[in-house]
Length: 618
Image 1: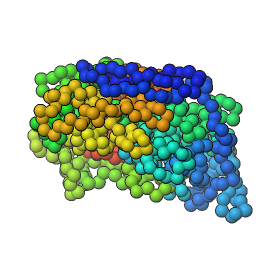
Image 2: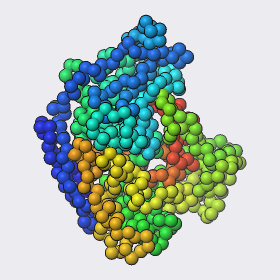
Image 3: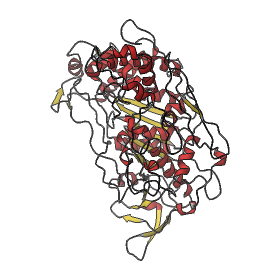
Image 4: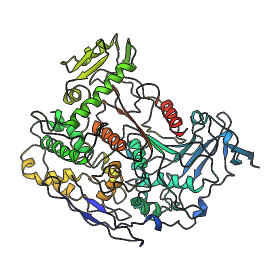
């Protein structure tokens, strides 16, 4: 199901006019697809900004933490023209053995250089991996570190270099310490956060001769909106769509030898990524919304009818992706006697994902087992800044009572006892005690018992311009609708919807203006959506397929009970990655009983992250 793609016409000239090619969604009429004035640049034509030499790292400004044996430096400006200095700088934290240092006359700072002879966990200063947190829940801004990041010692002991790059986001949409006359450039809207992170990676590679660490092995990690942007970092490597934005802030594009600097990553860790926003609303209604009859999905409301129409549209979209399972079989959805497109190989695949999650839980759990349903996460990753909202924490095995948010602890004497609790409102899980394996009757049964929707219709591009609409804001802080499928359904079905409750004719106009506004570079929402959709680069349904350098290693974890996003989002991302010839390994798992958190089957998210990084870099 083609949406309104920007066809980037690549040429050496700095300014080109790119055109949007509209296509229908089913039989719906398209929204206004106004042309964008976008600067598109060939890889061979990128240029360094004036004053790029100012980006050379100053190795006389290192600090030292003796407790962790870590040299560190903050306030590192990673671009020559930062739009918002509150966010656009970074900190780097290096294991002490990788540096030979001499204390400066101020008695506090050090002048240091790489020590290539000593090793930590088998790494040297030239082979050590570099990891970058993307702590942007809800696509929020991530403030640059201002001091020593407590907790980095754990990574340093394993020989890992920790780099924290601040990035613009929703909290960065107004103000900050802007160094630009354009308020639009300080916006936290897409694609500025990923642009900033790319600039930070380019900075490290620009300085690779004077900086410890293997800059070919940079790995990002994040949760929720941070997981989404970690996935984007993994999928969008060297995408030319980002060049105009990188040049806007003065990112390094070539090294001292005049060679192109890549912004591609080596690996990506994503917990519960809220991503693939172009079809996230439709996925939500197919996976969860169609099985609900409450709130905005109550019978008689226009949003219930819209929900059903969106679920149908998702099936059309899914079938055009032509995703394949591990056996190479093309997955598809088919019409069903009950439910909306709840038959077909793709529905069976999702059912299998759910059953695998449950059976992993039964395998991992030692009974008697006690679970506290309110305990979803605990502990944060190092940030080096005072942040009030983390969104990251240590996952833990769960398996709470279906649909329960009670803080009361529950104890189950055996697996059979636990399965009995799941079937309290009717049998939908069948359990074989001998094999310790379970099956479920349907995706619908799982959703109604364990994964009920927690968001209205639409779930992300909301009618009242809340939720993710700020991600595609324009004019510095004005949120924008972005779901062209919803826009076309509203226009096509206005007569039908207007006869139902809660209808407002203003919705047609509001969603119909999706592409009326351009950002500072000249991009409209459809173009920016492409840039912020990993599937745009990973699946040949999209025009961006094959236009980026995709990370080799991926680790994806999600709490299967969450109502924050559809299970299809992570599943489709995993399938697309598994089919990509440039990807060496995809470690994908859903975690039974957990919701929207840094979900892990066993152990802590931090320990598991470190083990994974070591595994893929040795």
